[in-house]
Image (tube, rainbow, N blue to C red):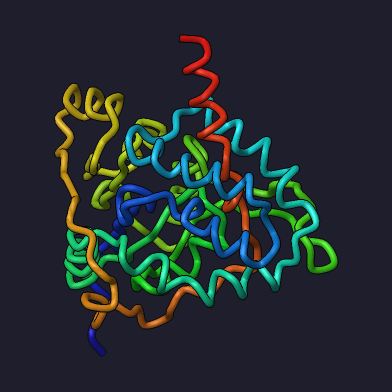
Amino acid sequence: MVPEPAFPALRTAAFFDLDKTIIAKSSVLAFGRPFYQSGLLNRRAVLRSAYAQFVFALAGADEDQIERMRAYLTAMCTGWDVSQVREIVSETLHEIIDPIVYDEAVELIGEHKAAGRDVVIVSSSGEEVVGPIGAMLGADHIVATQMHVADGKYTGEIGRYAYGPEKAVAIRALAEERGYDLAGSYAYSDSATDVPMLEAVGHPFAVNADRALRRVAAERGWPMLTFSNAVPLRERISGLRPEHPTATATVVGAGVAVLGLIWYASRRRANRA
């Protein structure tokens, strides 16, 4: 009988934010049009989401905007049918997400998987959006916002809001559950709101960093990466499927909550100027 090694190798993981880290846009804003075409959103909300997408691409959402988004979620999604939202995301996923995935991110995911690390997507977007995207990318796990569901419809109550410090809490819990060595693990994000997540691992990276995160990364000596080459995912995804694909989530979370709120916050700042 071969004895067990005295010090077995520790498992490690690579934790990725989603928006502007893996994909070039906000994952949930991108679904504004199919939600409108299915009757879940009105024309005004879709027009706002288009403008919000532009603002997000320029500067991203700050903490105040994200909190407004969470408040808006309870009003927007209450009563939406869960199965309808799942179906919309499934039917439009490749059309919407494929063209905006960063080639550099897909390569990096492949490198981590080849090195034996689990890949985990950690996003404040809803599970309904993040789950299918994670499956496309070959992620082993996802951490995303969850909303409560009753009788097949969203109640408007948030179960877990995967934002800011909560991301760090979630990955520490997952590390304990899965046996990850966080000191040997990696994390990638574009936003200063994810500093707690980056601090939780031994190898933090700033990707397409906002101004605040660039300052933190410079102060702490964190590597900074720039991803800019968005290519159709279907051209690069072969070989990245996990042994156990991430299951499509059953709740939408903060998904569509961001529609219109970046627009609202930006207009308020403009009016005060």
